[in-house]
Length: 419
Image (cartoon, rainbow, N blue to C red; front, top):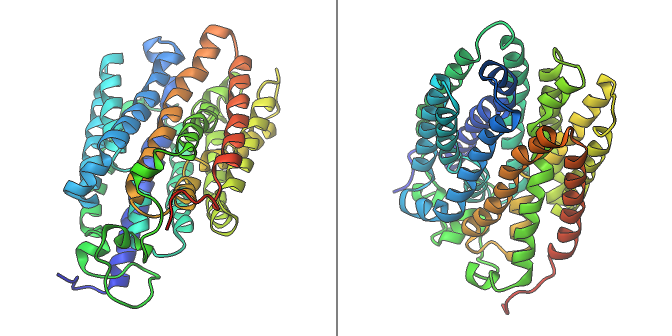
């Protein structure tokens, strides 16, 4: 049955829901996890590595469910119910986090966040945008990511200031309330896909409403090999490996950025350094979307990973002025965007739009594995190696390997099947 509202209005309401969920999930929740590290570590007398298991659990939960169940859940329940369920699980996880009195409860909270994030992360946003936008998908993905990072700028700065004057628990209760409130708002804003509402995607040419799954993603004409055919090619497994490796440099330093700033003696400015990183990600998100739409995803990946490698060289120095940390934060912000903006473009460019949601979900899950490993791996080098030097070497190697993989494997001229 056709929607009572215009297709355009429904489409932009869906975009508003994606932006709102990004603000709360990415900005207020995920991007402030590192702000809680120092007060929790000091209050409980635990190792940094023990706390950094939290973002790793979140990322592992996200990766596992995205890889195994996201596509099936989307077909069975639809993105609208997935968004609501994801926000509910993250809200419950925030409540457990705020009540935690030890590592067990903290890790349970992280597991709930991981389950929730699997329904709210890149897989969901990319699928929803592919459904609703026939063109400019990378730009729209960058906008959704950018508003989330923009919210993270404010949240990190405010949380970093308040945590010195109050307990970290009230701040986590605030996160909890935001997540549950967003669940209700998004339920009313995101009503379904164009196919479910009987309308066309935005920027689509006039004509009949798409009936097939692939056409409903805003593709127009189904193109490219099936998922099963893709998985028989070396390009598929090379790109999957590339996303796994990329997740390590993209998140290793960023997840530990507050602690790195504290180690250099900038305790009061540590949250500000994180805010600069998120500001860089926000401002450069539209630039990254434009790069992917105009030149393809490889250029974004090369520039992002090169920036992370330079950051590792800088943070290996024994002493740094504050402006150097701000420069590092800017490079890391753009490096983090390589996890968000290029994946959908890479998937479409190499493997076509046929069964896009399933293909992109698998690639994002691979990336999630690297993102999950990164915080704990990098902090372990600090706890057990006496500093970040060895960790920086690993990150630089991973960044260079990532660049090499995508220069070879992301080839838009590859013809995987006979048309």
